[in-house]
Image (cartoon, rainbow, N blue to C red; front, side, top):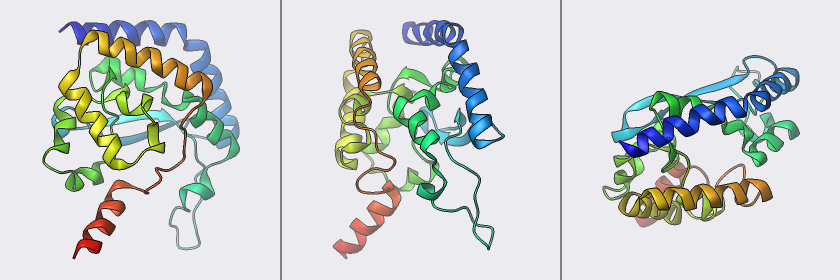
Length: 203
């Protein structure tokens, strides 16, 4: 109950204080990338239940001759890279926190398609609400291996406390300010493709 109250209060205050940043960013996204300004995608939330996560767009709508979207690296512009490095693209998720879809601190909400590729132990990352930031993000973000990242998620689930959340928030501010550990893609690639390769190599 206290964590939810903290989340709601923090998200509401942040939305008010950061409203000029949100407005300027929305204008810049529309100018550089066009409409829509927001990117919406279904992600797994508490207990794996799907919700619609919102972020600022960082990629162009670009397609090949067959109408298929071009690879991410072909659609990600320098402007989009700057947004991601600053983590400003994540700010609309404050609305998800206010709604109760997410928490300020928790395991990051990953893709729905990853669900079949978690081990039974790793599925416990969904025992708490996903977070705007988390232990994995302040411990290497996507510059660490999937095994390390998911292990940090489980460590948070087991050790969570208000003091722990405050320490992660403090460390997050430092990471964002210095732009550390920011990669477009995890070193091992998407989790589903990585686990498929791993399973094939063990056959």
